[in-house]
Length: 241
Image (cartoon, rainbow, N blue to C red; front, side):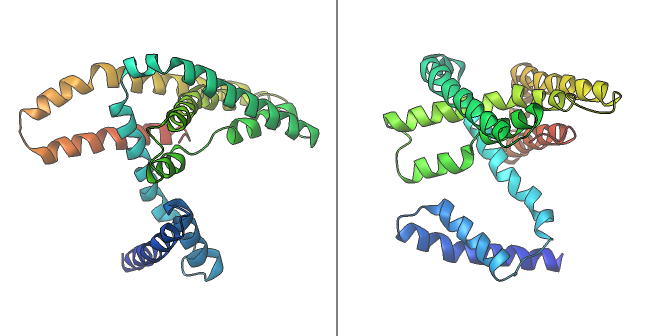
């Protein structure tokens, strides 16, 4: 426990120093966080392999941010954004996927590995881009809304892309028994994501109506955390983000 507390102290101290300096020079907080990580990690070795234990806690910050985006995003908003969502988002993912896959093929990788590399690199980080847009006060203008539409399309495209990756492992495999495993993995991914969608649609409203009877804000907060942690745990068992 003392070791973990010491590591947390180092992380927070590095962030408190690096982020304001980065902001002062107009580079934004994201670069400050990255610089702090480089300094305390590879540069001076103040933190080591134990950072993997704390990484799981840090991931929940990103998960909660995506959860809040989902809470604020209504189906009507998606329909109003359909032009940007399908046009810009689909074009970005499609062209980037095709270009990176072609480049990987040119370097001699087989087709299934090239597609996997393309799938991984055609997506960007919603957390980093949204943070930068908000800091620059660009999230409400035309460019910011277009960027948000592309990010949103990427987040939704993750579901089918992650379902495809296990199937790509079947191509060119020497062991035939791995086939059913990959196909079953893809079916499990689709099933779990469908369960999350249906649960969010039909279970969360009755649950929150019941919880609101307690009139205790902390219980409502605990319920929101329960939803996030439960979904993360279910997807984590399938090796998904």
